[in-house]
Amino acid sequence: MTTAIIAAGGRGRRLGAAVPKQLLTVGGRPMLQLSVEAFANHARVDALVVVLPAEVVSNPPGYLRHSRKPIRLVAGGERRQDSVANGLAAVDDRTDLVLVHDAARPFVDADLIDRAIDGALQSGAAICAVQVRDTIKVAERDDADAGGRAWIGRTLPREVVYLAQTPQAFRRSVLADAVRLGQSGVDATDEAFLAEQAGYRVRLVEGSARNIKITSAEDLALAQSLGDERRPDPGVRSPKSTTDGGAIGGAESQLAGIDVGHRTPDAGLSVGLGYDIHRLVEGRRLILGGVEIPFERGLLGHSDADALCHAITDAILGAAGAGDIGRHFPDTDERWRDASSIDLLRQAVCLIRDKGFAVLHVDAVVVAERPKLAAHVPAIVERVAGALELAPTAVSVKGKTNEGLGEIGRGEAIACQAVALLRKA
Ligand code: MG
Image 1 (spheres, rainbow, N blue to C red):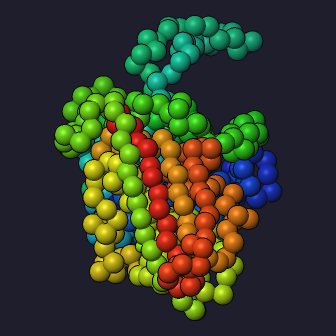
Image 2 (image 1 turned 135 degrees about the horizontal axis):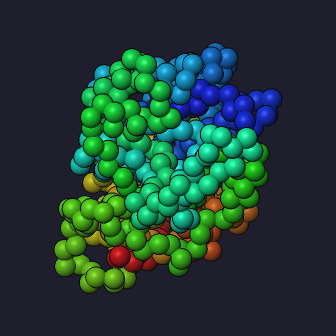
């Protein structure tokens, strides 16, 4: 299993705020929450350990008490590496892969997590990193110079210089050795350095310019403007992120294991169709598109019975030639009891991305005699678009009645249909 350690034990003194920086908000939500949700919502992350200041451990915010993945809260240590050591000590015994992420990087996304995991699975240790764009000068100072002026000592070839980010991923034994070295007196600003010092080769995988670390008031202002931004239009999505797995300088992961099959030509478009129907019963909440809709009855099912998410999930799986929702999330599996179907949709998006597909557009119809859906459509579109990592303009949801006909017309059920357009990278 894979466990993510979220390092949020620091105080962030450089920000000068009264509360720990990881609890400051970006786009209306605490940075820590954004980081925790990125990992908790990721299909390949099984559990989380969040390292916090002791006073937060004893009185955690709601999003740390109710997570859809097992989550342990532990108190941080003196240095960052001590906090990660405390985190590692709290990792479930069954864990074989550990991600370490700094809560001060709230814009971590599923692609970064995937690339770190893939890198560590292949190479034992991997970190997200971005190649520098600026020319790098190494400074020299003349000890005799009372003015402390700096001079260029030499210029580094920028092709070989990378800025380290998190997530950083390690086989558990590798991180254990790194942490042990850190406890023996070696100081480090990240776990990769300790792993290097412990003799391991650490792989670089593609990071993201958006994945900034917030350490100053200027960073926070920039982050707040990024947090307000809409998700990018799918038309400008980097096709690279879906084709090369983000590996830096390594071709071995390119399209590895992708079953292209005969369904779609390269760079082709494909469409998928999804349909679902659930019975309306008393004593259940009505969830459609991940949004709870006030109504006296709800849909019956093993999961939250979100028929709209189920139809859209089937549509995107269908377009990718990846089977259907029952194959990936069978209702005989206890893991999916009361599962949040919007999370299953997110997982399906990861799954088709692994097969080299990107969702371009989704259109869906909800057929329900009651309740009236029009007022809820904007919230549903927003939520579904978020799960699909699309702009809301690329998602359409329409409500219809069944004109009083049949079981839907009698209000005994709600049915949903969806089509999805995908592009094969
Ligand atoms: Mg269903």
